[in-house]
Every structure is written in structure tokens, then in C-alpha cells.
Image (cartoon, rainbow, N blue to C red; front, side, top):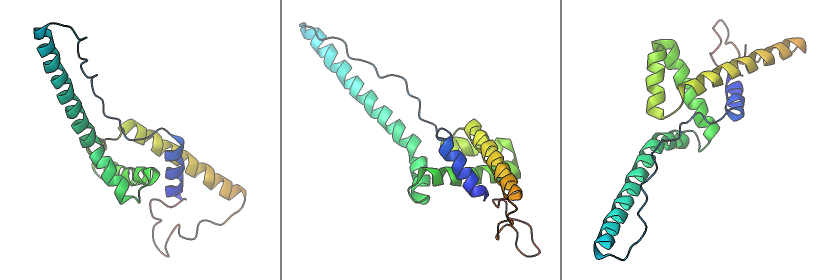
Length: 156
């Protein structure tokens, strides 16, 4: 159904999660023989090491939410993308693009990539529905409950 189309789209497109940006770390100056230069080089090396630790802390912070989603989704990147897409589309429909963009920021994913994922999943769903009709196959058994509306992720 629709979830299969979203998974296929997620596997076909680049990763929806953003990689954290960081400026290049400062490089230590070349070693010299002066006593003052040695002290300055040691101070610079300590500053570089501190900067490396700060960069590492920023990386961990950026990946923490992604790892939480990954763990909740059975340790699968495509399933994490499916969970993010489901929440994103729910927020987009209920509260609009601003709320969906805020959600993207909290989970460190690209809003435009999710739009692309959604468009591709819709296109795949349409093509599957057309193939189903062309091959005269019945609709999926779970597409619509008796007397009810089809769930949003069912292929229609």
C-alpha cells in the first residue's frame, strides 16, 4: 500500500536526514625550535583538541534524535524515514507547513527531501493503482473497512 510506496521512495532517494555542518577545525602551526614557540604550539594543540571535543559533542547532539528514531523503528533507516514521513505528513495536514518545518528541524531532516519523498511515493502509488486496474486485480483487502473510509496509507 502507501507505506510500501513510501519505503520504496525512501530507498530510491538520498537520505532524508541532514548531516551536521561544522567548520573545519583549526590546524596547529608547524613546530619550531624556540621556547616561546613551543609553548604557543602546545597552547594551540590544546585549543585544537578542545575544538575537536566540541565538534564531537555537536555531532552527538545532531545524531541523538536520529538514533532515537532509528531505535524506535527496529534499527532500520528506511523504517525511521517511514516514521518521520508519517509524522511529517500528519503535521502538514493538521497544522500546515510551518509546523511540519519545525518538526523537520527537531529531527534533523530535510523538509525539501520529505516533499520529494512524498511526491515520489504518490507517483508510485498512482502507477501501482493503474497497474492493478490494467491487470484487473481487485483492490487490496484492507483498503477500506466495511462502511468506513480507507486509512490514509492504503493504496487506493
